[in-house]
Length: 196
Length: 67
Image (cartoon, rainbow over all chains, first blue to last red):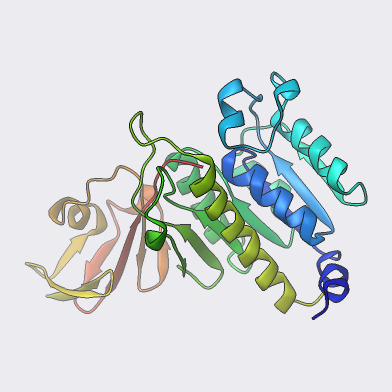
């Protein structure tokens, strides 16, 4: 496919980004550059100085909602992309309400408990909707440990499945970016096989 | 009985075991797990009452903070 054909196809689709931190902000930017039609950006947090170590924000955006800051940055890249923002903390009810019309969901939460909630909510409510998770990406090096696997009919997981964040094993830009871009890459691959 | 746990055959004592008991017995120490029996999700709240029987396939995946 030519880049024009790829962009035309992707322009028909909507992707939800659940969490606009290290994974979500970088995956959203990659998808925006690739030509996705619409992004639904969900997060409840504000941009903090330490977020700039790995998340797609700028220092003059500290203190603003991550969703709004990310929307602003994406529109600076391409203002034809349709964006919708929700400044909320997702629970199962919100998942059902917000994600019923999107074509694909990218899980980009920080906390394992939220990942678990979203995975269960997706499997129970939207078993046919492609869902791409990130699981394990703290630290640096150890590139070979990062993999992508299919865990259910429509559930895909990218990560090293091992490296939990901690004081001594922080999430860092390169490895978080690798997994975020793996998620975006897989989302493209899945959407390019789907028809509208 | 024999079950398949994360694609590996495992011998388990008795005729059945709950998912919660299996998690304890096999020392899955991560707090946040997702579980499936024969390809079907068993939600967190159902693990105490959902039983694994001979020949069942069980998947346990741990979820890791970071993102």
